[in-house]
Length: 452
Image (cartoon, rainbow, N blue to C red; front, top):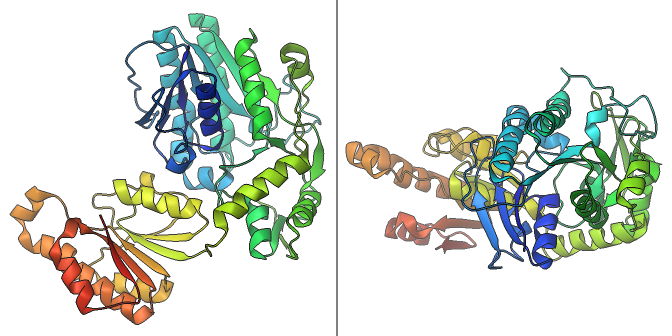
C-alpha cells in the first residue's frame, strides 16, 4: 500500500484521483482549501479509513507527518472565471504552492507529479501541439496569470529534478470534462450543458470557429496512472486529439440533451486560444496510452450527472450573509455547486475575500447598515441564509452595543427587508439563541427554519 498526497484533491480532477487510488487500496491525503473545490466531491469516500482531509492553502508551508510515496500537485484555479477573479492566488499556488509541494516531496523522498496544462501553449501557432512546442503566450494579458504560473511550475519542477535529483513527472492536461465539474464553472462544457438543460441560449464567443479537443476524466486518470508508473520526467500531453469547433460542440450538446435552446454569439475574450489539439504521439509511445471514451459516451454520462444534480430543484437566487466566513463560505459553495445564483453580504470584518467562490457576487456591507436592507429589496432572493454574526466574546465584553447592533438590530433589519421583498425562506443558525427564534415567530415569513 502506497501513501499519496494530492493537493487540490477536492477539485474536479483531484477528487477522481483520490477515489481511484483508494479503490486500489492505497492511503490518500487530500489537501484543499475549497477555494474552487467542493466538499461534496469527496463525500462519497470521506469516511474511508484510508482517506484523510486537510483544509490547507498550499501556498503556505505544508506539514505532513509520516512517510509519503507520491505527491501530486493539482491545486489551482483552472477555469478562466476562477483565475480572472483570483489572479494573485492563481500565481501564488503556481509558484509558492508548487515550491512547497516540491519541498515536501523532496523531504519525504516521494515521487512528485505536477498537473500542468495545455494553456502553457497559449494561443498556439502550430497544430497539433507537441511537447517540444514552446508556445505563444501573452505574459501580461488577463490569462497570463494562469499560463505563466503553470510555465513557472514546470520550470521549477525540472529544476528540482536536475539539481536535487527529485523523481518528477509533468502531465500537460488538455480540456477534460465529466462528473463533478462545477455547474457554474465558466468553462464550455458545464456552460453549454447547464444552458441547454435550462432552455437558455448557449453562449458562443466570436463565431464559434475556435477549436477544442475534449477528453473524458476517466481517460485522464488512466493516463496519470501510466505516467506515474513510467520513468518519463519531461512533460507529456494527455488529451483527446479529436478536434472540433466550439460551434460544432454547441450543436452536439443540443443534440444529446434534446434542448431547443438557441445559440447566442458574444465577442471573443482577450487571448482566447483559437486552436487546441494535442499531439499524443509521446503518450502512445512512452505510456502505451490513448483515450478510449468516445465524445458521445462521455457527454452522455456528464449530462446525466448534471441532470440528476439539478432535477427537482429549480435554480434559485440565494443571499448568504457572512458568506466570506469559515462556515458560511462552505454553504455558499454548496449552493453554487448545485447551480444556484449566490450573492454574499459580508463587511469582511472577520471574513476573508479569499474564502469566496469566484461565482458568488459579493456586497461589502455591514448587515446593520440600512444599505443591507436595500440590497435585499434589489436582489429579491428566494432564500436568505443568515450567518453574519458577532461571535468575538472579548469584543462583546468590551463593547456590548456592537454585539447588539450586529446580532439583534442587523437581524431585525434583514427580517423586515425579507418580509417586504417576499423572500420565500430564511435560514439562520441557532447559535444566536432564543432571541432570533422569538423575533422570527413575531415576523412570520412563508418559510423560516433554524439550522442547528
